[in-house]
Each structure stands twice: as structure tokens, then as C-alpha cells.
Image 1 (cartoon, rainbow, N blue to C red):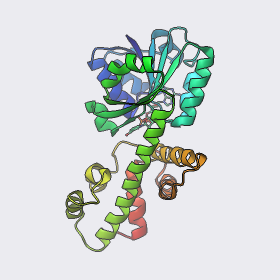
Image 2 (cartoon, rainbow, N blue to C red):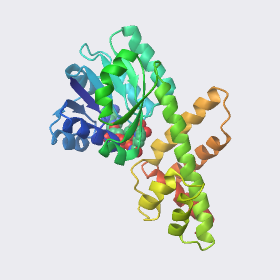
Image 3 (tube, rainbow, N blue to C red):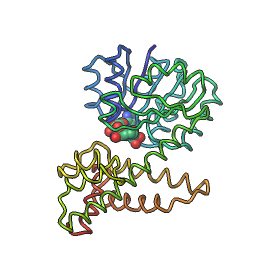
Image 4 (spheres, rainbow, N blue to C red):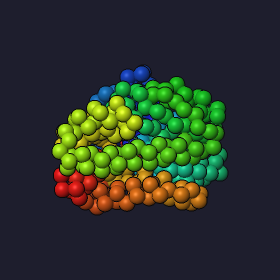
Length: 291
Ligand code: NAD
């Protein structure tokens, strides 16, 4: 199967390398030449546009930052939509159900390309090791054909047969993950101000009812070390939380905690910038706490 891959950043580069290591032949494109060169050096073919990837590949996978970028790569100039080779388009990015539904409907009108949304969770470490959760939805036959490819990234969870259902599940996951990071930042700041050793706090809480994924991974790797480099940009995390709260509000589902998390990510984004790591939220809270 000829595969194309567009977007070779923190996640995409690692997923593309796994596909190459699994023996797939890949044509790749990223607007950042240095990002592309790394994957070409591992054996992928270089393309000079998304359209060129689509001209060479039946299946095209994308790992791109935002819904607007995805829309542009699909329908913009030198995009994928006009390809007469591509039959399946897989969006591994977190772009929300609205964009997935719109893109699927527009592609459906043209009648050639089937959109599968397959957002992932598990961070750069999971992308490297092939232990991601892959949240898939779309036309059932296409999903089954793609299962071996998606399994290279981790465990495949089929969320439904309508485009966007995988994206909804991913937003639900991410609001929980960022809320855990936010509340852990507040609780850790309180403990530090009271003189508790942060490591003793983490060891104890991880053996207690407050144990969560932020204290398991993000604090030990990127907050207590002072490196704030877990591998996920504040701007992208803020985008996820916004997409989730907007979606919930649109459906009449109250998100009181979610809205507070959105505000905290907005402040982190304004304070440290969209390119900072999302663990910088702990720095915001530390600053307010004076710890
Ligand atoms: P990233 O910014 O590191 O990578 C995005 C890549 O897309 C970059 O290399 C960039 O140059 C490229 N790109 C941007 N616009 C382009 C265009 N028009 N044409 C071609 N290439 C273009 O982002 P990331 O952290 O790898 O995240 C990618 C997606 O996966 C996002 O939607 C993010 O929310 C999601 N995600 C990220 C993580 C994580 O831990 N980093 C985890 C799960 C999901």
C-alpha cells in the first residue's frame, strides 16, 4: 500500500518513522524543510506539496496543528482534494468533530475520497513506542482496510461509523488530561508553599485517590525538572480545550470545570506564548502562589 504522510512535527515524525520501520513505503511533505529532511533521511520520498503526496498515494495520513491548517491542506491550492489517486484520507490531528464532519461531507460530494478521523493520545513517547490510543471513526470498510496501518501507532479504538466521533472522544479525553494538569498544578503549589517535598507529594498522591496522569508523567518529566518540555505546545493544548468547550456548549452540555481550564490555558498562552510547552501552566500557578 502506497502511503502519504503530511505534517512531520512532534507526533507526525515519530509516527512516520514507525511506518517506515514497519516496511511501508512513504511519500512525505512538511512545509518545514528541516522536519522533512529527517524523515527523508530514514527512507521516505520527498514531495513538494500536499498535492504531490496525494498524486503518489492511495492513502494519505495527516498530523497537522489546527483545523484550519487541515482544511487548507485538503482544499487549498496544491491540496489533496483534487487527487485522482487518493481514496482514503486519515486525519490523525486533533481538529474537532465539526471540521471532520464538514470535510467528510465536502469530500463525499466529489465522491472519491473517504475521510477517516483517527486522532491519537499518548504523547511523543507513545508515538515513538507505538503505544498510542488511536480513536477511529468513518466508513467501516475503510476503517477495516486501514486497521493494520493504524495498529503500527498503537491500540485502535473504533468509536463509530460517522466522521467526527473519534474527534469527539479525543476532545473528551483531552479536557480530562488538561484539567488533571491544571488541578495538579494548583495542589502542588499549595503543598510546596506549605513546605512539603514535591517528590514526597507525588509518591504519596500516586498511591492515593488523587493519582492522575499529570502527576505520573508530566510533573516528574517536565515540571519538577524545571525543563517544561513535555512535547506538546501550549497553543495546541489551548486549541483542544477551546474545541471541546465550544462543542459542549453547542450541544447544551455544561462544562463549568472545562470553562475554567480554558481560561487557565488562555492565560498560559498569553503569558508564555503558543510555542511554550503546555506544562507551563504549572509556572503560571506557581507565579500566582509565589512559590
Ligand atoms: P507540531 O506543531 O509539532 O507539528 C505539526 C507539523 O505540521 C509541523 O512540522 C509543521 O511544520 C507542519 N505543518 C504546519 N502547517 C503545514 C502545512 N500547511 N503543510 C504541511 N505541513 C504543515 O504539532 P504536534 O505536536 O506534532 O501535533 C500535531 C497534531 O497532533 C495536533 O493537532 C495536536 O493537537 C495533536 N496531538 C499532539 C500530541 C503531542 O503530544 N504533541 C498528542 C496528541 C495529539
